[in-house]
Amino acid sequence: MANPIPFAVVGMGVIGKTHARAVVDAEGADLAAVVDTDIDRARAIGEKYGAPTFGSVDELIGSGLVTAATIGVPSGTHAQVGIPLAEAGIHLLCEKPIDVSLEAADRLISSCEASGVTLACISQSRFEPDLRAARELVQSGRLGRTVLAQADTKWYRSQDYYDAGGWRGTFAQDGGGALINQSIHAIDALQWVMGPVERVCGFTTNRWHEMEAEDTGAAILQFRSGALGVIQGATSLGKAQPKRLEFHGEAGTIVLENDAAIAWDVDDGSTAPSAASGSGPRKGAGADARDVGHIGHIRQVEDLVRAIVEGVPPEITGADARAPLELILAIYESANSGGTPVTLPLAR
Image (cartoon, rainbow, N blue to C red):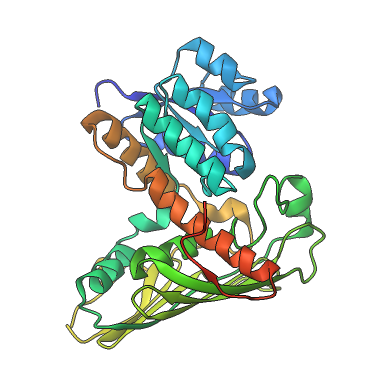
């Protein structure tokens, strides 16, 4: 692209570094600024990539250097950071979750709409070919009447992980624990493929971490279609397991691990896209958040570039990102009432 879109990366923690790499490697994007309240941390990344550094969003806005920004600050400050950027006419790529409350998510979505800027949200699994093909099978009816679905994120995080980022595992800044932070990718994929959830009952507990929120959670779902579902999410396992998704219908079964098919038994004779390419499951971030990789984030940066240039919606809009947040909040509401079923949508 002759004139790449100048991007800022706001927040230079673990995921912010991933965003910086993604912007640098993405076609049509240019890393034009790095922002963090810890200016030394920002400067280290800025010097690595040759980008100016700023200690606040206000300084970034005042510089007039960027057209778009990625938001990788603590989850409970996504709207707080994103709204001033949107009001300044800067397009946004927001990390998951979109925020930790529906009220904050709605404020961010409304601000972007009122300002005429694009809001894209991170959910990189949606770009994986096998997951996209699974969704097409279910949505087209080729998997038959759906029966059961499951989303498992059975991971490990050390106590040091939570201690190093004091916001992690807190309700105010992380929104919760293993479900809203780690499991949200699989939960988003589950409802993206299967459709809206009608009712949920959930349970959460903390098995061994010292933090406010859960390190282990589980839920049973009833989809609007009538199918049932199960969610299991944890950072408490001694041995992390691959992220796993299962979709079962009258005409077949699909099982994905780390977004690649390990079982594709469908009556129509189709095969998973990964079978044709010879690729298999990628390494996941089951035991270390730094293992997330940045290929998916490259795709999302490039998708935002496309949306800006062509004037079209991004693959994952603010409304799309709101859906898994609402489902997770419903699980928490049920868990807080001892497992009482909660009906969606939640009351505003």
